[in-house]
Image: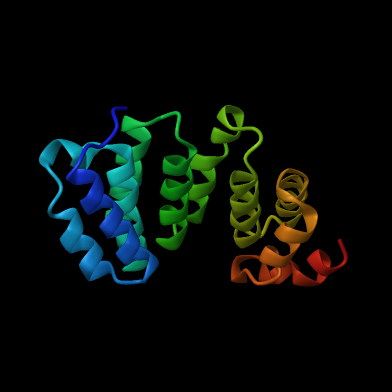
Length: 165
């Protein structure tokens, strides 16, 4: 994909800056300044996804994540965001079903493994959740993943077990 040229890159950077400050309204205002062709660029789509996620507008976030998957299928972020949006919409089985095949495309991605652990746990499949959590720890570092898991409400049913790892 081509690089984003000025002035669009400046608007995009400003939108990302506003997101970093937690201000979705200002981020959205900067995104409105982008030229039409740039709106379909994966980086602009990812920023749009982050705006919707910050606003907890999961239906819109899901639509944007699906666009990212379509325009940038080698980018793992679209797949992760799509399943996360589904999970937030209480469509966890669908999130699982969409993300599981992606492990073949990105076998060394700890976020995919971690999210699969969360989805499995929420679906009541704790043995499977543990398998994916151990894989995430192998890929992303035991201490880091364990700390993250012990503060993640999706994994709360397994916190006692996670503490013992």
